[in-house]
Image (cartoon, rainbow, N blue to C red):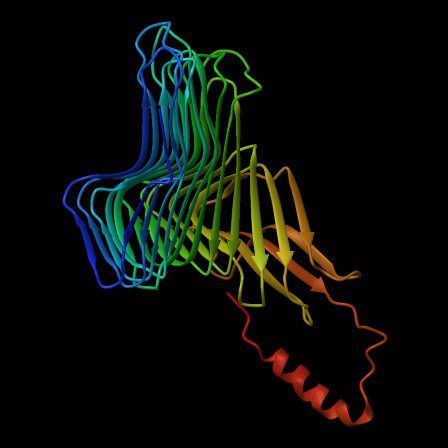
Amino acid sequence: ASVANAILTVEDGHRFDVGGSLTVGSADSGQEYGESRVTNPRGVLVEGVGVHVGGLLTVGQAYNSGTSPADEGVAIVESASVEQEGGSASLEGGMAVGRSTSGRAGGAVASASLLLDGTSLTGSGAWTIGEAVVPSSRYEGNALVSSADVRILGDGTSRVDLTSVVVGHAQSSGEGSARVTAANLTYSGGTFNSSNGLVVGSADVGVAASPVQATGSATFLDTNASVRLLQIGRYTGVGEQNPSSFAHGSLTLADSILTVDEDAEFALLTGGVGTATSELSLTRSVLDIEGDLLLGDGSELLFDIDGYDEYGRIEACSASLDGDLAVTFSFSLTDVDYWDLITLDVGSVFVGDFDSTEVLGLSDGMDWSLGFATNDCGQAVYRLAVTGVPVDPVAVPAPGAVCMLSVGLGLLSLRRRRG
C-alpha cells in the first residue's frame, strides 16, 4: 500500500487550530510481505497564518508492528514535512520529527522536516528530533531515520519552555540495528528553556552485537537558552567492542548564551565499550555551566575569535579536560593581547589537559602561548596569549601619516585590559 504527495494547505488570513494531536506522514506495517509507503506528505501554512496544536505534533513516523517471524513487511515514510512562513505557532504538546520503530527484519524507515521561517513560536512539552528504536524482541528488527531536520528561524519573539529535548537518539534493546544518520535542530532568535536537559547524539545498546548509530547536531543563533543538563555525544553500551556502533553529537553557539544548571558532558562513554565523539563550537557566545565541564577523549572544542573583545568562551564551576582544542582567529591582529577561553569559579582547578591544541589564523612570526593561567580575580583560566606581533617591513607609512599613526598607537595603549 502506498500514498504519495498528500498535502494540507492553509491560506493567508486563516487560523489552523487542533485541540489534540496532529500527525503528518505515518506508515505502519504489520504484514507478512510487501511495504507500507507514504511519500512526500506535506503541511504548508502560508504567511500570516496562526497555528495551534494542543497535543503532540508528529512529522514522519514509521512503525513496524509485526508479531511473528514471518512478518517481513516494511514501513517507509519519505520526506514528510511541515512548513510555515511568518505568522505565529503554538505547539503545546511537544513534537516528534522523524521517528522509526521496528521489531521486524523488514524494518521501518523515516525522514522528516519542520521549518518555521520568521514565525513567532511558543511551545511546551518534549521535543524528539530523529529517533530510531528497536524494542526488546525475540526477532531481529531494523529501524532507520535517514534525516530529521527542525529549523526554527524565529522573528526574535519566540519562546519555548520544554520538558526535554533529544536530537539524534538510537536505541536497540533486542537484535537488529537502530540508526539515526542525520538529526538536526536549528533555533534562531528568542528564548529556549528545557527543564530536563538537552541531549544531542546519543546511542543506547542493549545487545553487544547490535549496530547502533546516532548522529545529532544542535545550533543556537542569537538565542538566550537554558537547560538543566547538557549531554553532547553519549554512548551507553554493554559487552565487547562493537566498531560499528557510535554516538556523535555537535553543538554550535553563535551570538548566544547557554546556561547549564548542572553538568555539561561531551563525548560521554557511560557503559560498555563503544565510541562517543562530540564537537562544541563557540562564536561570540558564552556557555555558562553552573556544574562541571566534562570533556571526554573524543571531544573537540572549537573557539572562534572575531576581535579583541568578541569571542566564544566558557565559564564553569570546575573542568575536566581531554580531547582536542582548536582556536581560529577571524580578524587581523595589530597588538598583543590575551583571551581567557575557559574560566573556573574561585578555588577550582583544572583536571587533565587537552590531547592536542591548534591555533589558526595568525600571521607568520607571531608569538603565542596556550595553557593554564590565573586571572586578576584569582580564578583558574585556560588562556590564549599573543605575546608578539611582528612589524610588517613593507607597510612603511607616508610622511603625512606619521602623526596620525602615533595618535592611533597612543589610543591602543590606553585600551583597558580585561581582568
